[in-house]
Length: 359
Image (tube, rainbow, N blue to C red; front, side, top):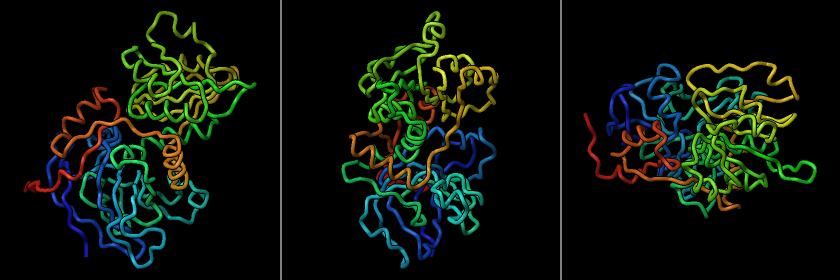
């Protein structure tokens, strides 16, 4: 039978969160039921709720940074047992058989993956996310949270962590050039950027944070950056032209892409993980000159996400968070949009206990 749980729900883009009951699908033989302990707030949740990425399916529960404990497993499940510490990220299913899935790129499933929320599930219903008491997930999309990680700091890694880790790994942030560490710039020090700084530094890169002001300089240096540069300084683009081998662009707002490409050394790479609502423009000459690369990156596959979790545990990395109860979610959204969070907000789902369901 379907499982009924409490969840935070929006009935429209301009409506406040309410505590509602939602149904999780009747667990299948290969499903895992997870008791959620923490759920991260991602800017993607906000974009979705506010219809900035298209019309959402309301009423809707979002959240794809989920950490908790296995409560029940289906009869065919072999990888998980009751009591395991686990997480769920941006995906809850894919075909599993196409070329991309077989290669470990479930996020690029040729048949279309199933997102953790606002997507069509295997039973035809709309998936509901992690701002809830429990979730039901196919066993292939469950991740092991290392024992050393608390649930609240682990949750944001399921999106912010892998979104930063995957392109840094792909473009060799830890490689050396002529005996020196790669010069990696992280553009923006928010939820994604603060993980990018930690991960790139742990890989062995020399990390520079590029931000509009030096307001977060202290925090950036504590996270592992070697220096912080303010992009609004006079002659900034002239003075730092050609200095970086790799730029991790986490900005979700309009920027002058061509000017930032000037900061790359020959054969340098800018990899984009921030998604502005409006299209951006770039002159091909900015790429053709000195053989530069402009690339995109979308989360990571399940195997790579587990690799990221293990890497973070090995190096003692974790999200820097603020924790709120379920009654603080609306205010947290406003603060995330305003850039007033250092650096991720996580919902303590234990606060569902005793909460009254709104009808």
